Length: 391
Image 1 (cartoon, rainbow, N blue to C red):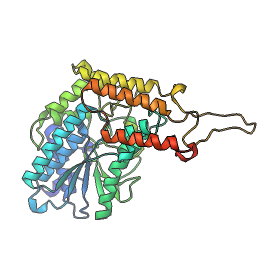
Image 2 (cartoon, rainbow, N blue to C red; image 1 turned 135 degrees about the vertical axis):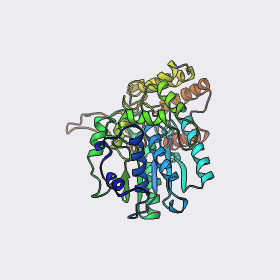
Image 3 (cartoon, rainbow, N blue to C red; image 1 turned 90 degrees about the vertical axis):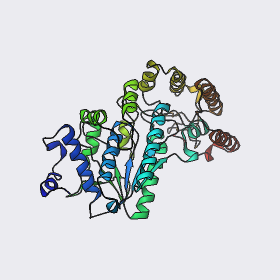
Image 4 (cartoon, rainbow, N blue to C red; image 1 turned 180 degrees about the vertical axis):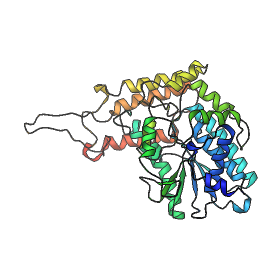
């Protein structure tokens, strides 16, 4: 156990302590350990784990803390939750799967109270089912329908299930104040509960946010990754190389629309390879420049999908609810194009399958193709007014 002096120091924000390097990291782990052992609540912890640098450092802090706690005191359950949109950057997903496997092996061997899980969008709300099946236009800055359906809903559902089972749940996020102005504003928007490290989640009743590395700088993060070994074995060398090749950041686990600001921007380039919100996918281009030329096919498809979005030849005149707006004189006003036409959707699917053949690995599942064809058949047989909204 640690002294009363240590306990007092835990009440002081990391950023205010004259610590650096190894001492700073030991303080972070010590703070996590104290939070885990808190007697005021024993709600489950849910680590939002994207596999990127920040969430990896958070996971390392939690697992180092767990290993410092006797087995009889490990009563709080920990869930390491990743999100797979099913259109993630393939290299990032390969790295994530490798780390998840190591985590599972470690938790089973040491009998740690940990579950390692992956959330995915509902089968009827995958990227391809919505875009090719229902004709949703490619996402852009003003219509980012993908974040909510692919990221927020699946992970939020998992969190709320745990809230229902235990009365509350604590979500551990690897967010930091120095990431960006938007991230700093998002963090500062909500204050911790008095005398606590927890912040009530703004959109998930019964969920609280814990940010153990909020005061670490980017240099601190890279120092941890470069000078320490992960408790689940191996090194962080592959992760560091991934960043070097991609020359980018990560698209973190997102739990609200406020937090989604960091996804699909120039500063967060590890995300969906299909992302048409960004002007250019610098991470995929970085992989190509590093010699991974198979990703050129994905870059070409993404750019083509972005280019055809506003082409009137490929968009329905009516929206999915059949509405067309007119003014009092009967003149059409502020026309908003509808979904991709059935013909355009078929063209997109054909091109995606052709891209898949060039790329060499699956980009769309057989189940998605079957659902897409079912949606087309149902849509053709229904009046436009019964098709529901796309935008």
